[in-house]
Image (cartoon, rainbow, N blue to C red; front, side, top):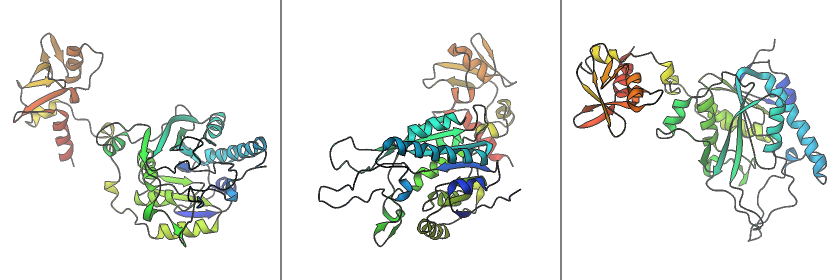
Length: 365
């Protein structure tokens, strides 16, 4: 069996390189494949300067003068690299692929044909998109990402708590407002972009933080100038890059050599509450954080009150039971997270009792 090497760039065709890797060895694939833009001629700005767009051979498939032939060639290529990527993914692994309206619908169909299960489509809204200089269409201000797993029942990684923390305590939505890669982050040579579609590190940061864990193996079959590897290195993930262009590999290598590697792994993971030790409500009484007879107030507007009993149950009017049972009963709903519903008063301010649970977690060895 081939030994998996990580933190390395393999030069060559991505499909052949994927097929040379061990099966079931990769935790995440992030793919930024060619879009098959089929651009017709160069694009000029109003001042007649040329827009540095995508005109490389790697974005050309089939007969460019015959859309049906070009689409057929692109579909064959897409099916082959996705099949190879599926083979190297672990059963609990996931795949992200990004595209524009030129290709993402074709990619999505092939993904589903191959048995992938799409979890989300994420819209990357560019805060600084390139304008439509000809004024013939809407400005293309977004790209679409598809997040997939190998089967509907796959036990994939999703660091919900990390995404919520990254988003100022709110659930992360599927529309991401992020700028294009510009400024010092944009790699250039002699004043020209090294790669025409270099993705911003902010985009990969969010993806890797959300759907991998420290030490996981992240593979990018279209490595380009190494954005995926650079972010993986910063976040304590292992990475594998596949790339055939020597100039891109040279730029990626220099970039990765200059990227600082994460050393303190303790700051890289955001543990979810499900993974933390269970703290019963009664522990708050045993530690003197609350006392029998204290009142708790329920809901944001404190419509309900309940009294704490010595055994860790609550009593409110005709209801008695756990913090969750009584919280649900007073509201007339089937379920309730009592830790967030019930509040205690301290110095004239109300706080969710979950704050006291977190205090106990912080004191655990």
